[in-house]
Amino acid sequence: MYRRIPVLFLTVVLMSVFVGCGSGSDSTTSTTPKATTQPTTGTQSTTTTVNTCASVPSGSQPYTIDAKQSNASYEVQEQFLSKPLPSDAIGKTSSIQGGLALQLKGVPTITALKITVNLQTLTSDSSRRDDAIRGNWLNSNNYPYAIFVVKTPQATTSGNYTSGQQVTFKLAGDMTVHNTTHPETFAVQGKLVGNTITGTAKSLVYMKDFGFSAPSIFGLLTVKDGVTVTFNFTANEGGCPQLS
Image (cartoon, rainbow, N blue to C red):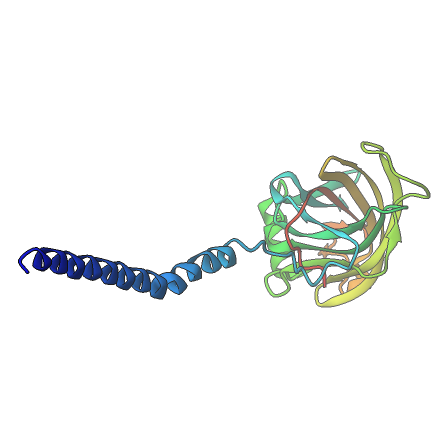
């Protein structure tokens, strides 16, 4: 009788242990769904962002103007009454922004381009001239920007391109100055090395086409209508330039 009691007691203890282990297993199972939700959150946070630059045509790569390595300038011929020969007035600014879209497959083609220059920041060797340009001639205090836009795809060369090769081509687009838009064509020289485009674009622009006359100050100073506009540009691949 007394021998059966320890055996019975031991049996009860063992059953309690097994039941306790079983309860622990059920508790672990119930927490499993919480653990599996954590990797899902981590996966979402590392999703790669897709370039959705809407202004860049499909199949083209965006290139953004580097203002620190670019500038825009004008050159115009002035004649002072007190001087026998005319002189060239030159003004420059690095306040230039924008970019272009370039299709490299096959014949390299510019599929879109937009360049914006802040005319208020043009600086020459004469502060009096600069003030007159802002207040009177260009009236850039009221019309601060010159904008050149290309919307029609234009090839930069007639064949395949080799990195570092300099190409020369014509680039036609619309220029807006003084709230007036007129078609202009630039002669361009440029090259692509790695991910960077460098070059120069130049055109002879007439003031009358934009609704204002060449300056004349009481016959003491006259300016010939015909302004050489030049862009010296560096553009790096990437970014999302606004091209429309």
